[in-house]
Length: 431
Image 1: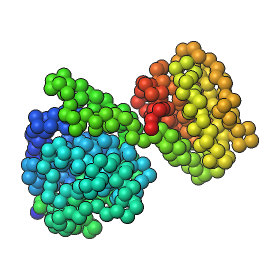
Image 2: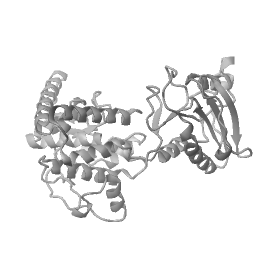
Image 3: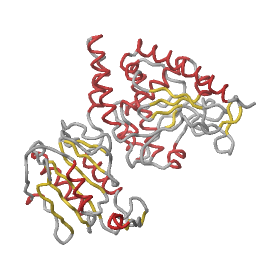
Image 4: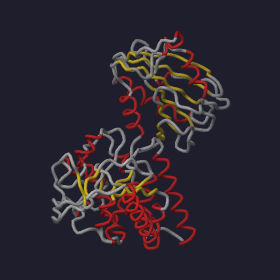
């Protein structure tokens, strides 16, 4: 039997209604989890790539066949499970770790917390060993990498429909900058028929659903922290305080999980390469109407813009000390450093023969703040051709409305504002 589009839409509406009812139940019984869930979008789907549930930090995707088979208590657990993947920002914490093992570790961290909060876990739910009870996902991951095996879980039919064995995991994990093949091979949420060309559920063949389009936005961490603060404040206004077992978790979630030095290194490394590519085109020839390939030499070509308006001065030694060490790992590099307050005050180039030395660096400017001049300066100097731009600032000032044709990393002071809707952001003093 195959379903018509109208029948699928009807089943999606029924799934959505169930999810909304469950959200209300969570809001009453578990105010923080339910309150955070109120700030996420529900997207019922019927897609061969998702046989259970998933989240991208802003939406929860739920397979309609999976939802239809779940008992009410287990639906609550699944929704709460996705919420806490968001709160704990697991999709951002994986970094370059091996996916399948980090999936296990992050599920253990979430499931332990939900059980402690009083939610009823499924029979075969993956739980940490007693000695791992207080460990983070990263710490559990290291235990797994050392050869420690997770507790055995009961075997029963896979909730996705189609039999098979469950390993205690039921949701698909979504990560940025990881290939579809990597994520598919690491996902436990697959039915017995998922290795076949055709996937079916109780209503027949399953295809691709355009509604299933998870995406990790570059400012996701900031958005999640804003939601955590909003929910915590709402609870404090209406109920007094957060439960004791959640207060520490929320405080930890508000603290960055990834050292800014690690993000800086990964960002710069990801922008380094030696292949030719069509986008963006070689800007030296655009004025002649020629859109030729950009040539990426075997050197790092980067630009750094420094907000010298005064608010970042105390952070510059730490930042440039880290940047200097990072540049030395590349050997051959070309670095353009622009100092800007309301305009470009100083620009200088460094390379392996004229190396950058952070202790000898002097600042210029210290007036108002405008983020636009460095982007104009790069556009007016096509010889710069940056692989990336790193902008250190407190975030208080006007920025270009649209992103440039090269990656941008905003390095913000600890209390810095969000300077633009585009580009990646990290904060200093993260440890």
